[in-house]
Length: 498
Image (cartoon, rainbow, N blue to C red):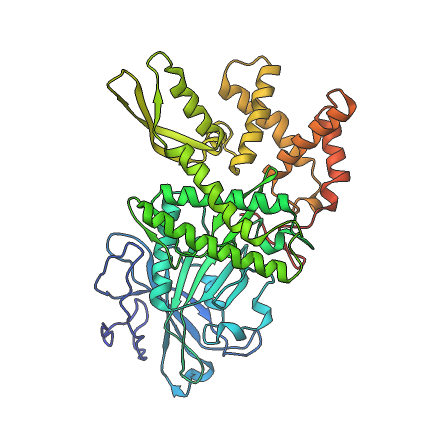
């Protein structure tokens, strides 16, 4: 659908004629359709010709934002001309680049959208560990953030963008969708694939970057645990992945374990609930994909000789089924053993799941049938945020809460909120400030604190007395943290904390 703007002139600019930009109807992130209206100039930039060095003067780009009815993401027409007004052999023709985004970052306009992603110049790129992908993916740094840019089909990009935004609204662990850039053309007029832009998840690594030489059995076990938890959380929310694999997952360190995040959602679908058949299909896809990835590691000599790829792919399914059973099975409780209901809820809390609702019914012999009805992951994470405002992974939160509870007992404080405030200001923040600036990019602060707690316990066991937090911090910084790789660095370029 198109609309003529031949009679439109922006306010304050009279007596100037120019070729109007082509108007493209774009559906918003809320999937509503709307009629295009007259746009307003909200930003101007300078577009350099494709392949030209920085600083080359070109005619300005015009950014037209048309807010969709009812809110949602605003499509943006970015109209660019090359030097002298000519564009790809057609003088005076403005070429739109269509950006669908919840929040437009003007820095996106500086990227060479008329160049195939595979040929983008190195000055725009940063090197990050990257998993296996069927698409061309590049990482770029714009301002304070690093973004992943993936070339794909337009319908696929729109569908994945919508899914990632929906997952973000329900607080699911996945990467954040930023924008879709469509209507791209090369300098010779050849259409280029649209791109999907997501924000890079800080302190996260693909599974191949979690080992330097050989993947040890215990590391593989922790990866499979994290992937099983991710799958369970996914299926509890009604999300069918359709391409579960280690390559489509990012991992963040979580107090000795790992937390998994979904990266690729182009094959996914969000339903109210999933059937057993849908869950089984997802598990079978995971089994096949992980088997292939383990064989690939084995062929490269990166898999420990004690790890059998066939056992690995079966293990992730078994871990998933054990966790799913614990969360969803219907339990029979004797009438005089009602405390077993609380015990079931506590076990789920220990696994990191919060029970918001329980279905309770009676049977003929007087016993109760108990089944958790509303279960959500992140029990310890939410409690830590509520008490301290700190956002952490589940195992990190569990360890920090244990330290907070111990502090509360030692300080003889009955008020939980008061204890949390004092622990935050007297324990957590001084420890984080004690980390030298050149070591702060090794790990995120919550992970550093969680590891210091573990290090303090090991030192105290060795000394057979409580060594105290101060000596534990200095020992950890000098003997442990200084030797760790820089997980927030990109080839020596700092990536600021969001």
